Length: 243
Image (cartoon, rainbow, N blue to C red; front, side):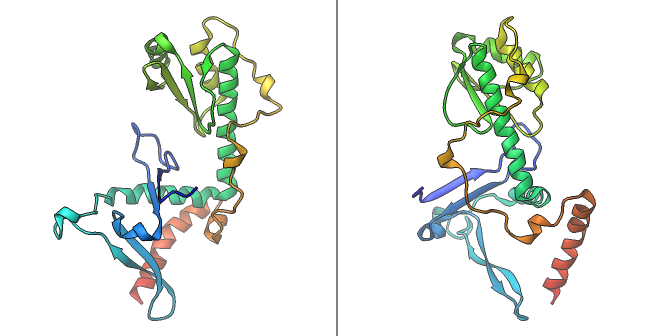
């Protein structure tokens, strides 16, 4: 997309929701900007035995060296979320992640369609897991009703709310959300959506290239296999380092 820098968050990618975080973040940049990146760059090299090895390729400017030109940040806490997110990808693999994503996208489209049936002013646009509804002067009333029902909606603006779904969302959750906007109207029938519904993701944004192609993302599909991988991998890394 011709961007110089891309930055984002894995959101809840294997991490439980925790008041907005923490989540693993990622950042990519064109080669000419790499020396201005915070943190450190690790590159792939080879060790004395010719085996693949990782080494620190570029260290950031630290505050204690040149404070006025420092680019370092406090990023140590990102390690655990990054490991959790990566192991989530190892366990589910590309097929599992696509299955989860399709379900989330489908439920989001069902939610939006149901809200429109109830007369809610759904703000149209591309959507994966979040629907925005124009609520006008009723914004605070909708948010309070949601809190009373045990749901935490987002105040997107003074006159709109955001509703975000995830892989734990159920039909009962959608029914509860519809109830907030029904005002006594009959709720949408799930049977109308059994044949499927078109996601709100534009085809132009659909990924066509392969991802997670390394064998490690295709090997472990049971809890037992995953536990053995998690417990055994550090030992192998230590032995490789010892050589």
